[in-house]
Amino acid sequence: MNTASATEGEQCELDFNSLKDTYVNSNIEATVIQSAQTEMEPLSLIHLNKNGIPYTTWKSLNNEVSGYSIRKNKGFDYNQNRGFVGPLIWHQTLIWDKIFSNESNLRGYDCSILGRTRLAGRKVTVLRLSPVDEIRYGFIVSKDADTNLPVELAVISPNQSIVAKFTVTAVHSTAALNLSFPDETFDRIEKMSSAEESSTPVVWPELVIPANFSIKRQGEEDSSEGDKISYQIFSDGIVEFKVYKNSKSSMNIVSATDGTLSVMRKNSKHNEYAVVGEIPLDLCSLILSKISESR
Image 1 (cartoon, rainbow, N blue to C red):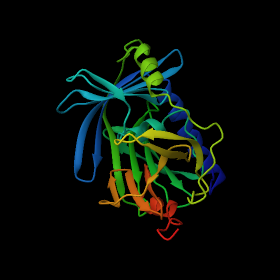
Image 2: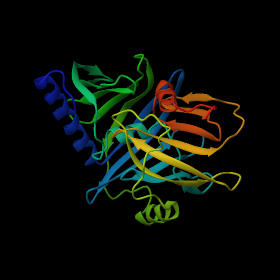
Image 3: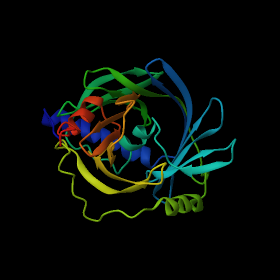
Image 4: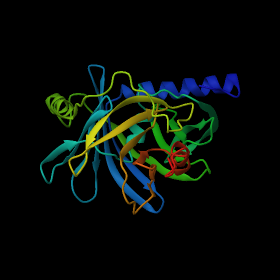
């Protein structure tokens, strides 16, 4: 992690790593308010650590009883009303899971302590994680001074607006054995979701990949028409994005956003490319900037 001030930056990094360690090893139930733009949604969060392995389950508190459950950041969607368990899709709260995971790596972020204040009745230390390239999301984390657990996470766009916020309104301890789903469910879903992936992926030369991102893996997915669609996945140690390459098509929607999620599509002479991930639209545009319909 880069630091503008060694003393302040090192202390900020120590505080953030201490928070992650406490969260990963905690056994808690919490109510979290997810807010994005004008929408607010109450959610139940259960985080457990069983034999050194972290488990997290998110559940909606409005409408149907549904959500997702992960073990070491891999898991599945569920809907108790419909008796459904299936592949994990994108959820706004996944960015919470990633940033507070002990597997996260703040590559290319400046860490600074903004100060200490009170939030939701708790004394907190406020940490800011700012990307050095100014083209990714930044994060503001409020850490409870007494429990050392996160109280709030705000996701900040490059223009310094808040694109999503997660605020803990209530939290209490729970037993580590109270797993929402047994390990057999995770094992079964992971086995069903496994796919062949290249062991030595090479970035497609037509893409522009920022310096702080690296390729994680590549593979193929089945389209709704039954065709194979190639993809590559990139990560900066926290968030990730996926680039799809398919045969050229007529595009109705070029780009869209949903909270922290952005989608952008662009045609070359023979292919259609789509960037999907927790990155700003301007970064999606940069990634596809070399692609042109003339070649």
